View (cartoon, rainbow, N blue to C red):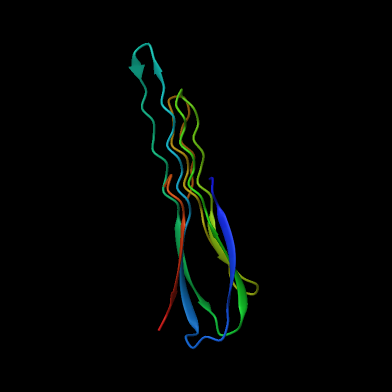
Length: 130
């Protein structure tokens, strides 16, 4: 996928000791169609990114790294290939990394689609549990 973004943030001195994380991978792009001899071929849409959730104990200070996967690019036409979406993930030292797969690209006239976890981008939501 294109336009994948990675950022870091620090959580320290909080009164609420647990956060819930939702991680969604970027979706795959749709396949490129073809027009030849006045016939049009259909193409498959890209697959949605996978999703995972998890809880983190944030009672100690950690630097978290969040990667939001970009959506795959669609096939530009002429029976051309699309690309898969990128993975999204949240990680920090000493905790389990939560990773969601990017979606597979859509099929085209002469090629099946690719397996995977929306050309839409991924998503990471962090919520404090009260």
